[in-house]
Length: 452
Ligand SMILES: *[C@@H]1O[C@H](CO)[C@@H](O)[C@H](O)[C@H]1NC(C)=O
Ligand SMILES: *[C@@H]1O[C@H](CO)[C@@H](O)[C@H](O)[C@H]1NC(C)=O
Ligand SMILES: *[C@@H]1O[C@H](CO)[C@@H](O)[C@H](O)[C@H]1NC(C)=O
Ligand SMILES: *[C@@H]1O[C@H](CO)[C@@H](O)[C@H](O)[C@H]1NC(C)=O
Ligand SMILES: *[C@@H]1O[C@H](CO)[C@@H](O)[C@H](O)[C@H]1NC(C)=O
Image (tube, rainbow, N blue to C red; front, side, top):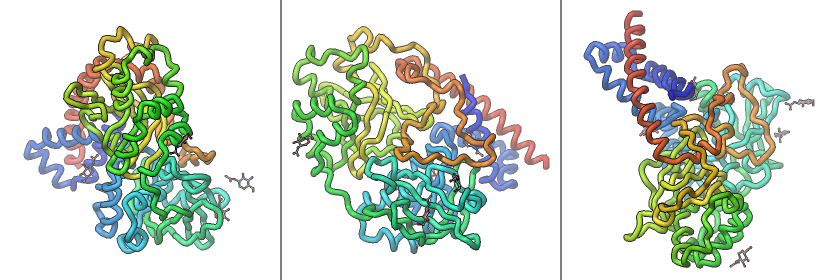
């Protein structure tokens, strides 16, 4: 059950530990019989991040990026960068960063930072070999649901004389930020390069209206969640959302297909109080942007949680796909509808069924397949990386090495919906295999290096 991805990550983690531990330290550790400790450290890393890079660690090596780094963590973007593959971070030194962000609320700083995270791999070589000298790249900002038109993309132009310039892709933007140096590359997973000045998109520095001023019904309808929107509005939940929105709120709104799926319980058979609990179960009084959601451990309480019932769920991540598990069924995050600190709204592809209401349902969805859920295989298409703009992600050269080729055994939606009990067994088994493999591999690597 060890899939190729996890073995590859293992390999990478070992390579990383080798580059991070000085040769002498590594050999001394081996001599001092500290190998089990090292293996444990490698294992810990494995369970925390599948992709293997840690932007916080990468930037910590240079104190001139401390502010940029600090805000990547505070906004939850660090977590998102760590769980994505094929990414470029355009970093600003402290002077440039503070000049751009001084006096702005966290939500604005977050928008600005997400415009500096490109969903493609650009290192020094690739930046200087852009076909026709200019290209557009989609950014994380495009995935927040707040970027309209080209505002979520960045224009990269190879100017004459070896200079590469960056600007917002919005018409009329000036190419006044330039490439200054390369900071760190892990081909073709993450590239970190420094640029001279912030990239500012039109309107990005304007503080968003307070979340309490939003029309939730209209927002949900626009996101393809009309049924949920009408239930929320007819059961008085819109007011609850409104009053919680400024203190931290995340809504998981089932899309209209979710309500049409086979096996969805007949809501008319529930009491009014039960319908309200079911709707409250689809929201939590916490701000959970994607990066935070992906690194969530344990169970998440919901607005329905109270003395009479836990009404919580757990979260699992496979590649870029995030799945919520209720204990009765599972639901995948389909799209980010809105990410505006401290409010997140996602659409999800199944109605979340809390055990408190549906534990006795014989089978909530007759179409559920009993296939076990692979522990960490990537989804065939990164669900959280919608590219609303039709920009092609230019493939890094050489094409043979791109991480784009997903393993053929990536989970299907049906597999994702498997019952949680079954996948728990798989997780346990898989980690036992990891322990043995990691210990064996690290012993081998350490001795190979010390023999040199
Ligand atoms: C890039 O990430 C993938 C998936 O985690 C991994 O298989 C590959 O080894 C990584 N590449 C490098 C050079 O670390
Ligand atoms: C990344 O590195 C930072 C600093 O070393 C650490 O605090 C954090 O837990 C790491 N994140 C992950 C997901 O391993
Ligand atoms: C480069 O320019 C040529 C001629 O204008 C055009 O046909 C081609 O599509 C361009 N290539 C890219 C990648 O934009
Ligand atoms: C990038 O901006 C420059 C200057 O405004 C423009 O000439 C170029 O066409 C833009 N590139 C793309 C791919 O839109
Ligand atoms: C919110 O939007 C809905 C649907 O578009 C509309 O019917 C309703 O009047 C709006 N509410 C407010 C307070 O503007």
